[in-house]
Length: 369
Ligand SMILES: [Zn+2]
Image (cartoon, rainbow, N blue to C red; front, side, top):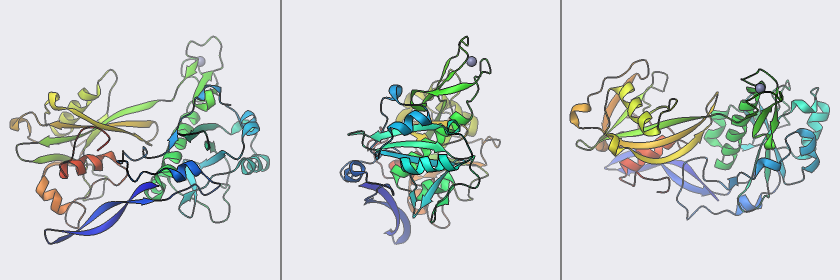
């Protein structure tokens, strides 16, 4: 059982408003049984950030095969191959499409590409036992995409919005790894060719004299921060010009080289809005992997109080944001996600969890609320 969120209309103070309520639904992959995932109950467990409420885990990669020939030799009915075409998953009946080993063999045998051109990159398995092994396969060079009847290509962001959390996590992980592999075919130190190792979780430079040798995926650390103004019971939200006109969110930005996450929080808030936060109040909330491009991001969410009323004046950096405002709790409770009010990021975002936790006066610490 996995938690998903469905929109409902609720009445608060005589005003009808749209809210998201959790609904626990059974899910499974569309090809073959996944009994451990099916039987995992989350009904009693508090939800974590999206992408983290699954039974997926990473095995010890070191002894995994790293190429098609050796992998297809050991692949049995526990292997599920996940075709990704130009960053997009295959979807049928609102489920991700997986290929069996036989289907993968048929694709390789009938395509005009050699087997070595198929990078096999991700292998995830159930936490309790290595029952289901998911392997991502980049089929981008097939033209047209090798779709079966009833299947279609869906852009990643759109697919995540309706897929189960397990499916969304699998395709996000797969695309992030595939993207890294496709952009790391050459060594950045000597320019030599690289090849996959360790179950395709890393690459190695073929040049035996190269000092770089092993190359690992690059993850971009970023921070999100909910800035709180305790004296007036307000939070600071901003919006970019490219967003929907009523969309606001918490402030965010990437950590720079040799910078702590806490310093990144204080710097980003100051740069984007001119507001100074009390660095002693910066509190870690939770983290969330995010399938951004070109590099996968790891977002760390924080809360922080403004450093006194005199430092709460907003001066927006218009190169970064179109607008930033203080929003009162009472106003947001009335106008969040309703016509004439503002909207915030959706169910998959830790930004929504931060804002919702503050609005409902829940704990602002930790990923388990
Ligand atoms: Zn090299």
